[in-house]
Image (cartoon, rainbow, N blue to C red; front, side, top):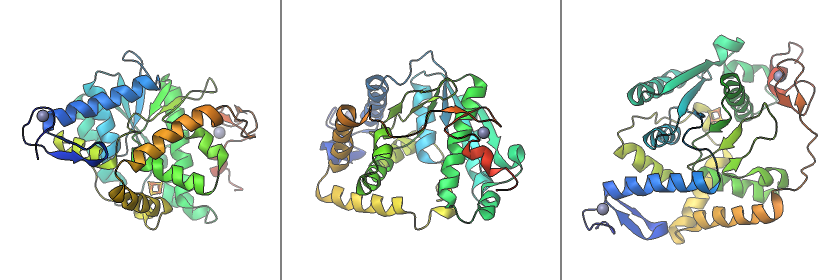
Length: 300
Ligand code: SF4
Ligand SMILES: [Zn+2]
Ligand SMILES: [Zn+2]
């Protein structure tokens, strides 16, 4: 297998593009794709500070790495959820890469700052799925940290596989309010709400894993103990089966959906009440007390 650009030995074949590339040209293409997504969605410019949420996995660490190598002004954020056997190991990987890249890293520990770890919070609230609680907590802390640091954009490492699996899930439920928000970039709609950017949204998990390995990024490989049986994994599996039979399906599904969303869904009224400020923490919410603060109200 030879690189389509230079004819040297290829290290990867991208079936969705019918393209084999050597290390140098794969990395070059990866960086170009990230730049293209940043520009197309007008996510952020080089001079603008960006908070990159890093979990220790390959996607978010690759995002931090590629943005730094492209000269963007990044600060890393690691949210320590206090998950035994995972959080400490993941944190070590994040700290290692941040030190290697000379990137400022902010660590927010749920237990140290708010008194309880994610598993402890989940134990008190058996009626909620732990992943829903986790998602809400992470979204809140990403936004709150960005606001406290005066940073207007939060970037996350969501990849194409993540995006198409939630697109499939939202489509199967015809969840229009979620579909309307499913974009690689969501601008801010409140002065205390950071814009949300997903610069890797058009790159597959496989491309990102290759980038991480070729860039010698040591990432956390173990899955979260709470991810077992998650529906997203099932949808990813189904989409991989389709992709094998019909390469390029994931990318087409996501790209075409973005055009559809732009035309028909972007400005629809999802029926959400207007945002106001939480009476406890002052952050934006549609209720009197935000979902995060409600977690710590004693009668809840
Ligand atoms: S799998 Fe683990 S890290 Fe992911 S959302 Fe669920 S609890 Fe959080
Ligand atoms: Zn080449
Ligand atoms: Zn609040």
